[in-house]
Image (tube, rainbow, N blue to C red; front, side, top):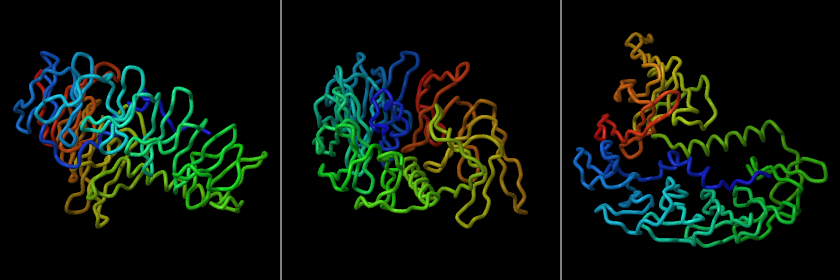
Length: 385
């Protein structure tokens, strides 16, 4: 069974995805970089420097606190620019595993820290996952696995050779070469042990696929073998995965409904990869605009990121499509929900907007990017060249 626990070098790649958790309110301080000195600080929404540009790196504020790097160590500061932890962490990208809990790296291993700097656990984990149903997987250097809760308590001690993910209150674990199911109190709740549990499926609508004694079959939560229509089961799994993706990439509630003509797999180096929406409709089912052949992100905070060589067409009063904008090759900008270009097509990459700001980069050569800094939804740039 594939282990869902990811080492932190991999989890840190999720930073731009987990950055969606950084705050639910528009930030008042925005990371600002002086490219002449290569130092970071913070500005207000007018561009006025509020916290001096003295840091080697700076991340957006969340709940009044922010991660910064100084002298090649990471620490947490408050909105006055005062350190609340000292600079004691290895400067990896902070990985949010919940709205207010971050995994940071100490000298050798990882630990859990609250956004306000409160340490929840010792720095002893070689890897972690993310919180699912209130519990987060932990991985020890001894190759044993368990779970902690949001208070940093090892609610399920690291004692298993492998673990799946909690779904519908149960989780498959491996011990002494066999798999069985436990609940959040670490008690076996489904009779029987198995040679393999398909953790990609886990329990879905009360059904799970297992393998034992050379046979693959389905069980219910009583451990009974049951007959399940394969197509229905597969479709339920796909719907659950789509719902998980939808929640993880939470878009504005008022975004136009996307009708998919095609869609890439999620992931990739660019934040807009994985979204190929062609036609966008409003809530009344009326076509708003079409993206003829370029890539676009979903809408976030009223804006969608458009990528290279996109041709955008809208609908005129006669109901006919008319070309509105032809994108610039290998450049990225943003449009609003009417299809109007609000961020010029001049960047190599733009992350999705969160709390009114987005990280932007310029492209150098073939898919090599240099961070420029942040822009707001009006295109104001928060850096000095």
